[in-house]
Image (cartoon, rainbow, N blue to C red):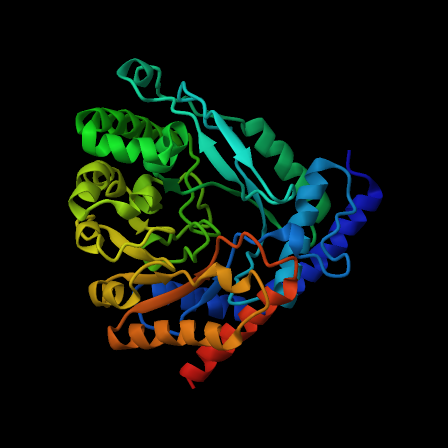
Length: 413
């Protein structure tokens, strides 16, 4: 039960949020992000995500005062957004509503992860994993099953009503859905361990094809269920940490949930394939995901894996729009191949913020990307993510953002 005191706390935070949400700069940034995703050259937006919040508090600004679970979730939304706006704003865009995400369960695929973890910080979700092989035989592979997604509309109604009761005259609440991601090798690696897979790709390729066929069946079912159950959103707030705004998927309606697959982003990656050949990447990844990706409106591919050797294969996905350029990729080689036809989604090195900032190193990293993208006419964005630590010093991330913004401003002056 939300107490009157908790309601007062949330309403005061919401009023502060609305003040900055209403600033014209939000619309300006959104349009700039849209230009980039439309492959129109503009000043590259900078987004910061996957923040180690347990290391970020300054003067108690992230301490939650509510006790009710729903109230705490709302309080966290407001406090983190107000904090980011104050200290690490970058080019964030605040939504003009409070998001309520549709409630659903993904269902089981019949096999569970069995792992041993080691951690150095009990408050950090970045840990070391050792996975037990659950899918090393055809008999075990047969345990895989198609999951059943279940929705809970009564929970959605309850959550919307709670939000309205708290925020009704200050900020509207909006029911939000999801976009579709299919990253089977992430799942397979957690069920088998990366080393086992890499050996089997060479020694037992037919078995690995059977594995991917199983996971592709699961992926197809999941995407069709998400569409049928009205869970897809054509206007998500983020596309795996990157700006999602794009003209090709815009709807003329305010209702964005319940979209068709043809009107949402597809998200793909195969991080463990960093060490395989382009032909193996095509055989075991692209050949399987391509039909799924092309059922969606646009495709964004890539995460931490360097893709400079795989871009010619990636281009076989007909609706490819955005390509991740990780800290370990050859930047110029990526730019040569991306050109003006795709978005150059650059991920700067998060290790830069793990200790005291070397401002010259940050400046040089960003300037190099800007110069390369200018030379090859790339529409680019910067997304700092995978920030496992800031060395328990929020100033590191603050200094990184300030340095990056000044560097970009100087470059476009």
